[in-house]
Length: 165
Image (cartoon, rainbow, N blue to C red; front, side, top):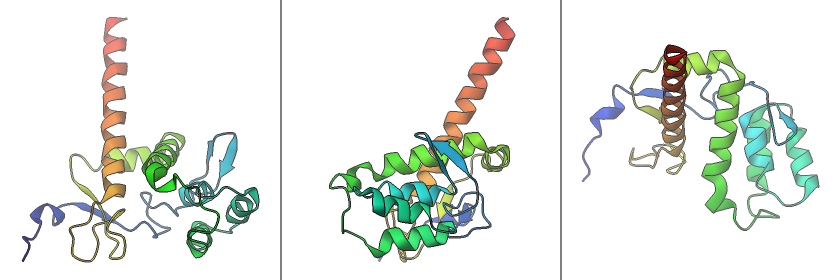
């Protein structure tokens, strides 16, 4: 039997597929990345899985992040980049960081979490979330905490520069 993780009780919880949560990948927070405008993080993430431009365009044409998620997962391996699994964290980090820097409300919500653990509560994704048994990797939560640490470090550097001037 496994031990219950008590840090999950006090953590900031969110669902990747909750369009009303700023930490979600499907929330409507448009951003520019790689010379393209993306309606949601999920549009970017799902489109970048595929080699064919027609697959990418179909995902980009999705009316919302949930549809982009469904389209990107419906085709699962058909036409997917062979290196996708190795690069998926990088792509997600790039999109979430860009979203955060483009939207003050997202940045403020992230900083308002203090030092709390951030947890994606998906029961079905032991990679992005904590999974059904709560022993998943919580990669999405880890990325948000890494972005939070980077923003804080950048703020400290800015404050030091202002003091020196």
